[in-house]
Amino acid sequence: MAGLKKKKPVKKANRIVKRTEESTRLYERAKKRMPGGVSSPVRSFASVGGTPFFVKKARGPFIVDADGNRYVDYVMSYGPLLFGHAPKAVSTAVRAALSRGTSYGAPCQGEVELAERVTKCFPSMERVRFVSSGTEAAMSAVRLARAVTGRDLVLKFSGCYHGHADSFLVAAGSGVATLGIPGSPGVPGSLAGLTVTARYNDLDSVRELFAAHPGRIGVIAVEPVAANMGVVLPRPGFLEGLREIATREGAVLLFDEVISGFRLAAGGAQEIYRVTPDLTCLGKILGGGLPVGAYGGKADLMKSIAPDGPVYQAGTLSGNPIAMAAGKAMLDSLRPEVYRRLEKSAAQLEAGMKKAAESLGVADRLTFNRIGSILTMFFTGGPVENFDDAKRSNLEAFRRWFHALRKRSVFIAPAQFEAMFVSTEHSADEIGYTVAAHREALREAFELQP
Ligand code: HOZ
Image 1 (cartoon, rainbow, N blue to C red):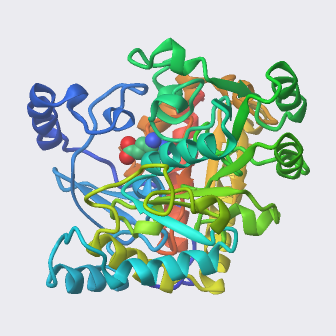
Image 2: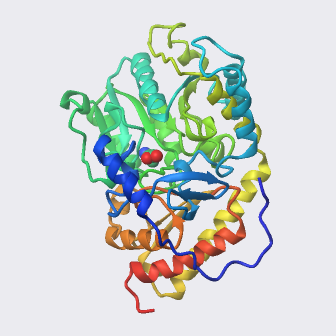
Image 3: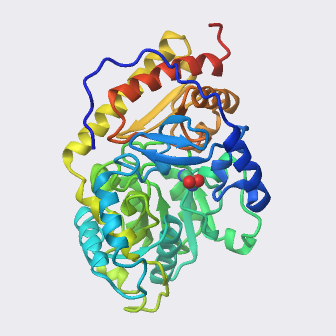
């Protein structure tokens, strides 16, 4: 990974995307064969309009589309790419693993090695089960929590997203929020009725639900740092309060650290906020850019998972040797200086973006929420502390900002309710360029005179 170069920040956003024909052709073909032409809804640009670009290749902080346009990328695959695209350590490990076969249907050393690293980074995870995605991890963790508590109700927070399993598609964030889907058809009412929702950062709303459903809530599921309604930080005392309530009420506290895990610190949000959950879900960085998820917790809880116990969960590609190798290479690269560098770069980006907003006189119409390398700029005056606050964002202004950035070769998620992800590969040059592009994009977002 390259260090931050000590160059003057770039002043001009002059890389304009001109050609889009090839992506448009691919999109037309894709729409004939795939719903919305995509494999995951947010990617379709459904909420911002226009044609998504199709990626040809990516390296470091850049992503190159089918027409050859090169973007500074802040999507970073929605989080996994802490070291940018195609980092050498991960690529080398993947190539070596590939030469030894792609999938075994039998245990391999890589699983043991990755499990040892995960449990070291996350002391609350004495035992870990690998799966293939964050969705699978959350779905399985809830099954376990229901089994060990003998209670059916799941408490989640509106705007938090824990993947697309049935129990979680209630007041969900991410694409569900972006597309304005209140709950998904296909999720039986009887199942959706087993999920109750509280307000993020509002402990009273949690207490009220426990009072309304005495002895019935088996699990409190929460993103300790919410990143799927845009980035929303826990207020001081919120996570501690959840810990207290869960313990008092005999419910399992489940931290979904699919995004925050390894990104905010090697030990995730639970290391930063010093609150210990009963179960944790991981994904994204854990797989170094390959499909991996995991869930785990105290040995006493995890002993209920088959084959040690009766709670069934399995997968042919779970513990896949190539994904395990990628994850191991990733985790072995996590050193304190990585987080210092991420903090420095992301702080530079935030400061530059804020300064641009101030200079244009629109700062009071925006809210910046950032922790470490994840950041959301909401198109609303602050504070943004829960989903209701986030939903006050001016989505039309966001849409214009998104397209104005894209036109200037900066790629952010096509949705207000996602995060910008900074990697160690975003140097002062890329950040300077982004700030300059952002300044111009803000003019377009707020329809200011040049
Ligand atoms: N739910 C994911 C973002 N929070 C979507 C990822 C994708 O579309 O790649």
